[in-house]
Amino acid sequence: MIRQQRLRVELPLVLALGSNLGDRESTLRDAVRAINAVDGVSVDAASSLVQTPALKLAGVDHSAPAYLNAVVLARSALEPHALLEHLQRIEADHGRVREERWGDRTLDIDIVTFAHVLVDDELLSIPHPRAAERAFVLVPWLQLDPGAMLPGIGRAADLLAGIENDATEFEAEPLW
Image (cartoon, rainbow, N blue to C red; front, side, top):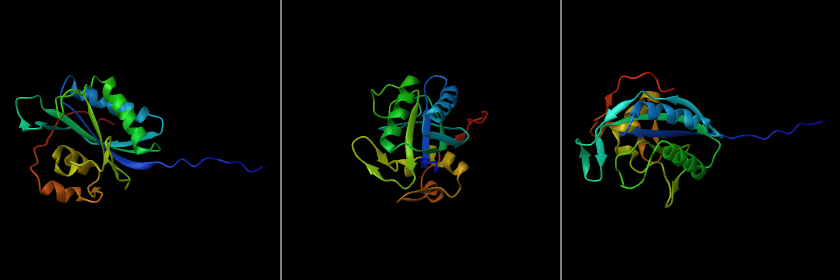
């Protein structure tokens, strides 16, 4: 008797997490555990935490609470839009409300890359359209993967060298 098994393909992905309201560190820790608990998603690594000033539509806002940010390397058997739905549920479970674009938030989870998949529709853009301009994405990502590449854009290290780096280390136990 030949036994048939299904092949489960998991693609690598990079997620950026941020929080500037509430217990930021605890929220990010809980979010990493919640991401790993999604059926079809496995967390492989999480960066250390970095702190950055709040970035608003009008620019950096030093009067707003600072963000804690991290990057997670994971694998997913879900298609990108299904993953997005799970990530938005995790955000909502942590009190995220979407009233103001680039407003303060308890939790933000962005899909930075999803293997070499390209998506650009009204719900989702992969790779993340502003990741190349964000030290709070590039710095923690480079901690985990010094050779990180943003598909179609370039090496994360080169991108970071071309922007202002306002990310500072935040003392905390490892997230993962």
